[in-house]
Image (tube, rainbow, N blue to C red; front, top):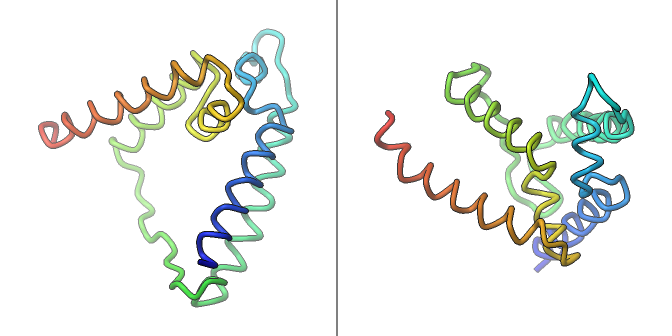
Length: 139
């Protein structure tokens, strides 16, 4: 039960943070990505703040064996950059740049009733299913 409550609170905090920072506004995101045009630096500051909080959280997590809810903390061990990772990152970046929405803000936008989310989220799910179908054939 505690695990679900902590997950709910964390998700709500993340969603409100996305709304307050403007990261759910596709036009603002595209303005941030337009570095050679009317660049909007505000999202860089938001991401920098998020990175600072994440660094502190990761450093604290490294010092303890279990999380607050008693589950084992397992830190990632893979450090290699693979072709698969690079292709995935490029596809993610291209999609983010084209529509100004990524998965987290897409879920938040569903809750706000914005039409873009009702186009983006099914397209994202279809893309994930297509990948799951193709992935075994690629390796």
